[in-house]
Amino acid sequence: MTSHAANPVDPDPKGVPDAGLPIAEVAQRTGLSKDTLRYYEKAGLIEAVDRSSAGQRRYATTDLDWLAFLMRLRATGMSIADMQRFAELRRKGSSSVADRLELLTGHRDAVQRHIADLQGDLQVLVTKITHYQGLLDEQTGTDQP
Image (cartoon, rainbow, N blue to C red; front, side, top):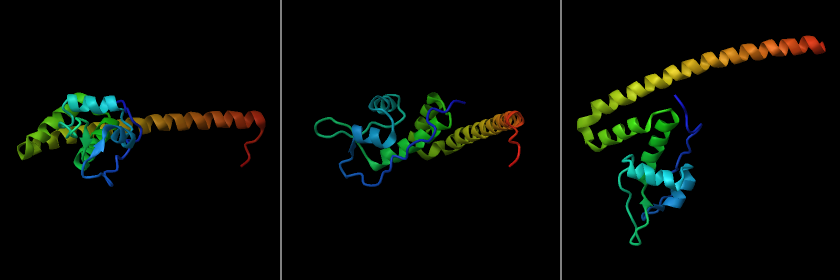
């Protein structure tokens, strides 16, 4: 599982004007590029974003909330294909709740396994650091606290 964003930025839906936010501001708030936001729309991850009279995308609070969730899914290693599947199920409404639950439960289980693997890897690093610190302390005679 590869994380593409260490800490997804909370897009902070507070302060969104009724007319929505332009793509540049959404990009700034989320840390996603404008190209990524356009791709998410084209790929069906987000529904068609409202447009201004001039044809510019205007993101609503609900769009930012959904983007925040998508960013969490991506940060925890969910594939774009699975994110698309989840978005498709979400569009189906209440008839897909069981399928959405199954998808999220499976993803949660994968994340938990990944965390357990990382904890094991971290313990190996801690052990190796302790070993090398001990060697360094012996060389310099600074093993006293």
